[in-house]
Image (cartoon, rainbow, N blue to C red):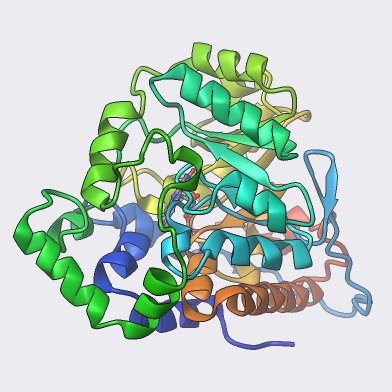
Length: 381
Ligand SMILES: Cc1cc2nc3c(=O)[nH]c(=O)nc-3n(C[C@H](O)[C@H](O)[C@H](O)COP(=O)(O)O)c2cc1C
């Protein structure tokens, strides 16, 4: 059944969250051109309507990295999700499991991977950032295996955090001066529902996967300092080979945008690639991912599953991504807006709605199965 579209949750989340948190989610880097282009490029693609096909029984089943899921969709890794709603990552994994789609837990989540494993009914995917101290990375890889993760995502498009000026302007990052602290405090107390849900009932609000390393991080300024000092900008393809050696399960590389990098990733033995510009949060003016997907799919070869994210907001977008060759999509902001607005129920409703939108889009383009979505469902420019 249809409820409300993904973008409506953005408005609800805007009301509910302190401005710094909303802007942290909503913003992109520099002038936010790639952020805007991700959605614009998707909306410019036209669909080819096809009639009089029996679409009474639409099959959404999708195979990703050898596992069957109920939709060609996953919840992308989003840091700090447990500060948008009470134990946010736990609420999200429950919704994802209900819909039988992958949930990706960020290295920078509030809930630890062990807490997620306690509440998940299926194996979730763990996202890894490469940290200078390899023993921390190694330890996280071992913990992920121990809690039953079968898929590891190595995010490679963050040697440095992007220049996100909304965060600087509103005091989310930058110095931890008295003025910035007061600005934050004002925002917190002027959003009592959020304060009660997260600040009072939702603790501890710490970086659950890194409590030993980040015990002092009680503000974004601390986190930023830690990220700047600990995220390793020297990471190269040899480090991917190192992760491949450490990790026995499925390995996905996230943040690939070109055919050349896709070819290399494939040579280094990844099982999957996520075409991503980090939702327009890293290198501004790179192309929209929908314009990069075809080249990556061709270069990756038949043994590598290719997914894409950045800008996916509707069932139409999912269909367009599949038609352009993606095996599946991920949503980032869409699920965290729904989570911030309505918790687990919001994410559940969002996923139900995306499925319904996809059903309608598949029906009117004459597609009976998600696996078989035809290339000619879109009209190429
Ligand atoms: C608030 C926020 C935090 C994010 N944190 C992470 C993260 O910790 N690790 C990661 O690999 N990607 C992270 N991403 C990027 C998402 O995984 C995903 O690539 C992006 O959100 C997709 O674009 P969309 O938001 O338009 O769907 C984050 C994105 C947002 C919006």
